[in-house]
Amino acid sequence: MIIRKAFRFRINTNKELNQQLSEYVGCCRFLWNKALALNLSRLEEGYNATNRHRHNEKSFYGSRKKISSDYASDDVG
Image (cartoon, rainbow, N blue to C red; front, side):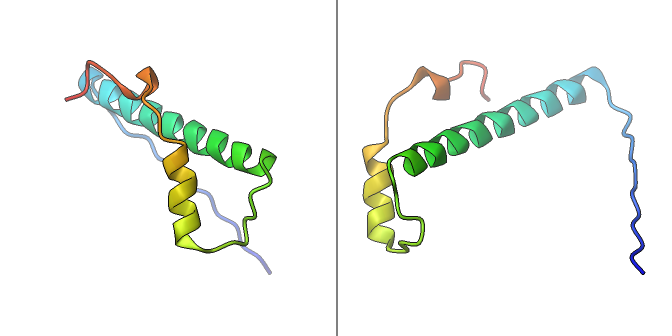
């Protein structure tokens, strides 16, 4: 017999904590979307996912480096 339970939590926050949580979640979403786009591009290019050689990984990611305004933010700190 499988017993499944769920818990719901609620935290009481103020405006400052809400702002910090919103920024944190936004950063996580941004990084997730960048990693997803990278993996989708690798799939489209026919990258062999079973290839475990780290030097291939370095050369692949090195060729994808770019300077982008997406990574820059004036309000970090």
